[in-house]
Image 1 (cartoon, rainbow, N blue to C red):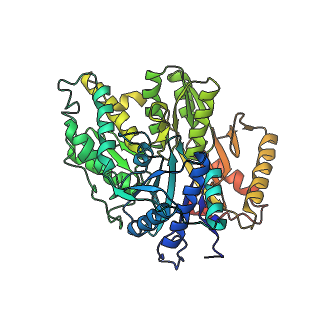
Image 2 (cartoon, rainbow, N blue to C red):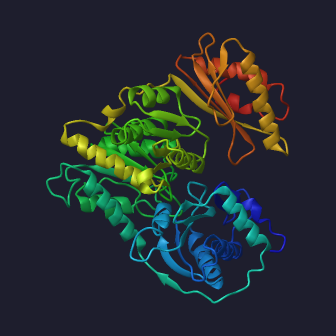
Image 3 (cartoon, helix red, strand yellow):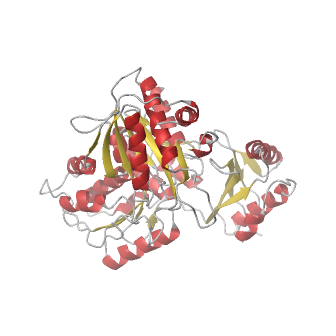
Length: 510
């Protein structure tokens, strides 16, 4: 353990590693001994955060991965050996771990979720929370440094108690629904008459159907894959997964449901299917949530990630009368930017990513898939009482004719520098082309408007958040436009020996 590289576990604002050997011979680097040290490091970090507070209470929850139970035991041991008292929630959702610092008679000081999110089932990780929200990237760096370098002297050993916090969290969501649905004849059954299909993908989101929607009167009888299963036997637990969306869409159409809701494994992301079976995700999800929020807070700002479409910008700015602030990819980046804008007096109530992370100001700017679904269902219930449908809110959202994302591998040890150099050269090239224009107010990579013959679109070239990859998003309002833009970029990229262009062929762009 002395030579173990804890920094290799850094994954943005999370810690993530390989908890069990994979099919391709992946070696475990996130076993119980590592997790125990991380628990001790977190207590030491918290003692500085709380200015020396002696007695800390920390909640621990986990998703349904098979490695979760043994990692939870190790984590709890590390926390208690460092002197903290632990409240063990067992199976839980990531948003619930943050809410344990806010709700109940005796909120905890901090929470930890053991989850690999939508990563392969042999991987796992940690997400950390205080009452101010999820930790940032720099905080994770400090914890990893403490785990690697601190001697971890054992203090007074803390205690462990077990608690079913998910009931408390479910009741919180239920009260939000009761307050939000205005027309309900029976206050305790505001969702009576609605049929909603919940697809939990065998992750941790099944509670939303059985503990929130059903007691409020909704028909959830056609919901699927609610039982947690670390093998994820039916489809990936990921609202962006095509197979998962098709499965939900088919179920919604077959059962004539009013709405389909799909969560990722730890329930911090969500996607939807409307009553026609059409997916509501990515740009359409942002558009729909923006319509809801801007009705409540007219003229306010919507913060999104960088890959959102030009049509979405028109929809938010011109059609809804809000302000679209396109920022960097990464849910913590988007959330932190929304908090910053509020701090300088720019009213911002929603931070949302195309991946399905959505955070609302009134909900502590927590990226909570169940809260997002709650907002959506409240709106659905209120519209239905007026004889309206949910998809009417985004009927004017322009859809591009074609779009794609191509991921280009960088074959160079210092891939960040190599990728940054390529982005700079693409910017210079685009700035000198008569029919391509660099777009202002871009916070990530280079974004270019393409108005060449048959193009009428844009592209964004940026560094991946976690991988040695340049991510290229292209969108066009003309048939064949994406291919025309891609062909020009492919020719230019040919000068970079350290860039793997094979993805162009895999996507049929050449």
